[in-house]
Every structure is written in structure tokens, then in C-alpha cells.
Length: 380
Image (tube, rainbow, N blue to C red; front, side):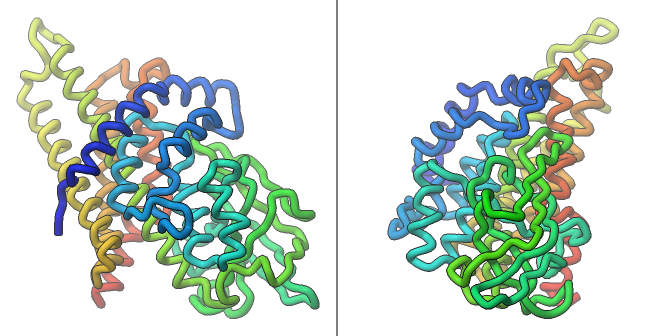
């Protein structure tokens, strides 16, 4: 398995890194947070991302995409994660649009996927619920059969990228118990449909998220994505791809936090010497370097496995997310510690990395969940 980038991916990485840096994401993130902007990202920057073609990376050419893979997506998400870009790439592309691509009919793709790839609309996947704790089978939100279709009732939270999304792909239960794999269905719901309430949900890292409430929302049969009651397989595939993309974002964040910390250790003086000469800090920095490289290998292995449809792909996905969750939190916490008093202030940017690490640590399953999943997959 190839764990390094090929020539095309290296070129994409350089382009992505330069573009993200040019948009000054940390300054924008601070401004968006301070202004209380519920959208939490820049539509102008999102339009540029669409123009660069990044939204089409994981989709087939037949669907209007570039026909590339998750490994190429990770190149982009790592660049976005390095400077904590607030644009909802993973929620809109890897969760929302990819759900339509994998489960939708030709008509549904034309109606929802094509506009998403063109940047004229955004799709959000509403799959999570407050008591799910990472379990994709959990769905208390219900869809009852009616004469013309289905009636949806329930609450989904958090819905990543839910604020400002034009289309919502809702996971609701049409049969079975709350934690049964069978009986899950996917529905396309317009944000403007009667009974749909989208309430902004501010996360500690300032990212776009929402609570979606469905009160007697009526949809017709054409709103069903895939086969009713058989959505779990599609959902698991979508979440695995998004999880690796998110782990790539976390990899970028932890790598940047470490680089900033190392630079500070080389500049800060105490007792007349650079603090980077202190052996205790050198040992701590060395451990962080190892964590970053372990995460890098795990993320790329999982991305390649998904692209190659490897039999152990699910296991590698959970390894990657567990390593990224633990590693990013450790690196961010240590970075704040080694920056000292200034690292605790809001004026310094390093604290934003710790907030992003804490938010992404529990997104799409925390380390404990993915270790349990790995154990289950291996039959332990």
C-alpha cells in the first residue's frame, strides 16, 4: 500500500496549501466568531473552492466529478485543517453530496447533486442524534407511512454544515427499534419544507452546525434515497469516507500546531537561553512529532484502503480516527502548555487549535468508539 503522495497529489497539496493560506482562515475564523455569524464561513471562499474543482474530487465523471478518490480528498482536507479553515468541506461534500451520489437515482442526482457540485446549493446529512454516541444504527427520528409518502418527526443534532444548507438528507427509522441496522431510511428534505426548523448550534471551535427539528414533515416517495429501510450500508460507506477526510483535517491541524510550537521553542528565551535547548521540552516535542507521523501513516493507509476497496478498510478507518483524535488533542494541549501564559490567552492563535481538536475529537465517533468498533470488526 502506497503511503506517500504521488506526483499529482503533491501538486494538489501545494496548490491547496497556497490557496488556503491566501484566504487568511484564522483571521476570518476569529472575525466570524466575534460577529456571531451563524453561517460560520465565507460564501466567497466557498465559491472559490468550487471553482478550483475540489467539490468534485470524490465523485465519478458520470456524476460531474473528477473521478478521484479519498486519498485526494485527504490532501485537500489536510490543507484546510492546517489553518483551521471554517469552510464546511467535509459536511457538504463528503457527507451531504456523497450521500446523494451513492444512494440517489439519476433524477435525484440531477436535482440535488449537480447543483451542489456547481456551488449553487449545499447539502447536509442529518444522521446524528444526541444519544447515538457514534452508533450509526441509532435513530429515534421516525418516518411513518402515509397515503402519498412519509411523515417525519424527530430531532437530529448535531447536523454538520446544517446552517444555510439548501437540502437535508435525513436518516429516519421506518421500522425496527432505535438501534437496529435494519429499518433505516434516507429522505431528501428541503430546508423550506413546512415543519422543518433549523436552529444554529455553535460549537466550541466556531464551526457550522445545527439542530434540525422535524414536526409532521410530509414528503412523497420521490424523496426516498435508495431503498426504504435499507440505508445502513450506504450510511456506513458515507461516514467511513467522511471520517477519513475529517482525520485528514485533524492531521493538518496537529502538524501546524507542532510546527508553530517548535518555532516558538527556537525563539523564546528563559534564563538567557532558548527554551528549545531544555531537554525536557525536546523530549515532549519528539513525542509530538511521533504522534503526527503515526497519524499521517494511519490516515493515508485508511484512504488508500477505501479507494482500493480493501477487505480491512473499515478497520483502518477506525485506526485512523482513533489515532487522529488522540494525537490532535495531545499535540494541541502540549502546544498550549509549551507556549506558556500567552498560550492561554484568546489573543494568541494556538488556542484555536485546541478548540478544534476538542470538537473534532468527538465528531463522527471519538477514539473510544473507534477502538470498540475495531475490536468488534476483528472479533475480539
